Structures are given as structure tokens and as C-alpha cells.
Length: 548
Ligand code: FBP
Image (tube, rainbow, N blue to C red; front, side, top):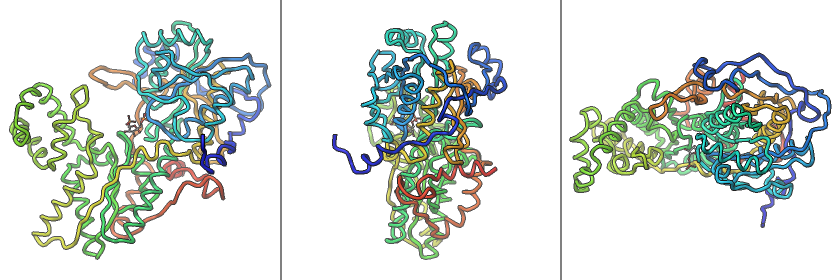
């Protein structure tokens, strides 16, 4: 395999570990824990894994001769930089316990466990992937591990390979399922431990004990680099408005972090839109006003950041989509009989007046996307909606109207971008390389101590890596009951952007200045070698959240 010069140099990087994990580890158990809400319901559903104590690892344990163990690992869901380092940390951890321990990787996500597709991860394979981006070492997938038949099918291969513990690397849903699996195997006394690891570039798997999910750092830095480049281009040519959509299925953490790093003229935060019950027109007017004000000052250029999940956070759009879903589920056949150029009018005539008015205001392409592109369950595929184009087109229309009224004089030439997949497999930053390696290594220590139903946790992340605090958090502690597909289910609470949190507050305090002035910051590419302030700085989000 041909490798780039950086890949070769990077392979030699030795990720840093918290000092507590360098030698034999002492286990400190805290108080019994409770779930964040719905304690009675969660306790009833997880009788074997509820209420377990917090675990913290400390220096100064006694060296023990540990028997060889076999461990299985699964990558679940969307790629996030650093996944390979979680696996190499886990590998090094179990090998340190006993050199005859083995690591098996299930292929293409949780489906690999159910379908018995796996490989043994040997030292040669692991060495090929140290400090690299991607999940290609074993692949990932979105199969949900939630049915008893899947658990039992998985057990067959677990038994065949003599696996004692399974590590599931995933987001909130995958870790919820890891906990259900841990509970099931514990209830059946199967003697199989299950440990979770917090992954997602979206940054929405975090709480008091999990300071950030891995991959968020690298993905945001990658997007911020390119946003900075666009800002510089924008400030050089002075003729375009760049509308940039940023990945993040529902929470706006990525958009907010990129805004803090690059100081664009506009950044929309979905959680604020929802909390203030903003309409699509409110958002369009807000952006158009900034465009008009900058034009009045002679600046016909700017940068706008838009979170991927925005549409579903606009309460009025949510209601429109819900009505469209119901209507087309019942009258899809009839709709398909209507001539293409009359379909828009047909829909408008069938919706309630409020929704009809919103639908009528949408650009043709988006209206069509809402009525045609549906997933196998008949729902609108919201993530396919090109929000960056929707907003720029509506802003353009509004500016044209203002021009006629003499309220705006200027030129508006938009450019569109969507940054998502570009950041998910980037080579992990030093932060993610270290954090992920520590998460994987911590998982091995949790396994060695017989734990199940825990998430690997590494905290104190704004301090140097040596001072990070490693341990385990009972997954049930992060759970509450939520309605999913019409049924109440135990799930890990998703962490949306908090409007009273320090990162949003910092943004809100500065956004007016950034709108008016051209206050762009150009972060440049991730650096792997060089001074620590250039190479090891954590995200602004983490830094601000820690400055309490
Ligand atoms: P996870 O929640 O599984 O980590 O995935 C995050 C994500 O990258 C979202 O930001 C994005 O909306 C989605 O995955 C895209 O999914 P897919 O990879 O299936 O296109």
C-alpha cells in the first residue's frame, strides 16, 4: 500500500495516556448512581445494570497476573476521526494484561456480530491503522442491535470465539443498545461483558461525565480550516455570499464550534430557532438584513453557516412536514395521478391554511423535495433538503423585493457548500488521537475489572493528557424515557446546544460585531508536529465549558 509522507510520520506517533493508566491501576468506586430522569422506569428495565457506582482509575495498583482474554469490537454508525485509535488502545490494553489476549473485530457494524462476520485483529493489522482516520479497519454500519434474536445470534459467535467482552464504539443510540445488550447478557448470566465508547462528530453524546464524544475535535477543525479558506477568498474577491451547510444530524454543536473558530458574518443555531419559535421567514429576514446592512457599508460579501438539522427545528416547518407526511401516506396514489406541473397547487389546496401558506412560500425545488423524496417509511428525507440553497434563494427573493421598495442597494451573488463527509475520516488531531487511544485503553481496564454496562470515560480534557481522569460511567446513568416511534423507550439523553451554556453565550455576545465587521479568523490546517499551543488545543466548546 502506498503511503503519504504524513501517514508514515504519523504512524510513529505514540498517543499520550493519562498517567493513572501507565502502570498497574487502582480502582476507586464512587457512590451508587441514578439515571438522569425517570429513575423508577429505568431501574425496572435494567435491574442488573442500574445504580452501579462511578469508577475512577488511579495510579498505584498492585500488578496482577491476568489470564488471557478474548475481546470483540464493533464500530457503529457514522465515521468519526480516531476510531482506529480506540481499537489500538484497546488492543494494547488487553495485550498488556496478557500477551496471549486476542481482539476480534466484527465487520461492517453491529450486523457483523449478528451475521458472524469477523476478523482477528493482529499486531500487523493494528500497526497499519494507528493514528489514521476512517473506520476501514473493520468497517461500520447502522444495523440496530436491539432484538433478543440478534443478541442470541451474537452469543453463538461470542461463544465460538471464546469472547469475554464486547466493546461497542458508537453514538447515543448505539450506546443505548450496548446497555440493553449488557443487561440482557447479565440477566441471562452469560458471562459476557459489554462496554461502550462515546463516538460521534455531531458532539451530541456528552453530559456531566462524558465531556465530549470523539471525532468532534478533528471534524470541526477540518471544517473550520475550509471555512477560514472560504472567508479569506470571500474577503479577497469581495463579490460572493457563501452559504455553508455543516453536518450534524440534529444538534448544532458543529456549526457553533466552527463559528467560534472562524467568526463568520452569520451562524444559525437550530436550538435557538426552536426555543424562540422562529419561522423560516424570520430566519430569512435576519440574514437578508445583515446582507443589506453590509451592502450599505460597501461590503457585498459574507459567510453564513447553517446547521444540517435546521429545518426540523423550525416549529412551523415541523408542523408542515408532519401534515405532509400524514397526507401523502393516505393520498399518495391520488397525488401521483396529478400532472407534474399541477402537483404544487394540488398540495396547497389540501393543506391547512397555515401550512399551505408556508408551502406556497418555498422555492419550487424544495417544495418538490418535500413532496417527492421520501424514505421507505414514507417520511420526508430532511437531510437531503439543500437548506443552504433554500435560504440563499429566499434571501435573494427578499432582497429583490426590498430593492423595489428602495430599502436595499447592492449585489447579492450566492455560492453554496456542504461540509460533512470531508471531515468524518480526517486523520485524527493530536487531541482525538490521544483521547481515543485513552478511551480504548480504559475500556480494557474496565473489562479486566469485570465491569459491564459501562461507558469508557476520560475526563479533565482541557488539561494535559497526563492529567486526564480515566474510568467508567454506568450507561443507565445517562438514560431517560423518550417516545420513539409511538412507544416509550429508555434512551441516552441527546445533548443539544444549551442556550445558557458558555459556548452559545460567547457566540451570542459577539455575533452582531461579526455580522457587521469582517472579523474572520483563519484557523489553517490541523497541525500534528510543532508547539503544543498549535497542535494540542482542544475545541473552543470544551475550553469554554471548562471555564466555569
Ligand atoms: P452518527 O450519529 O452515527 O455518529 O453519525 C453522524 C452523521 O455524520 C451525521 O452528522 C449525519 O447527519 C449522518 O451521520 C449521515 O449519515 P450517513 O453516513 O448515513 O450518510
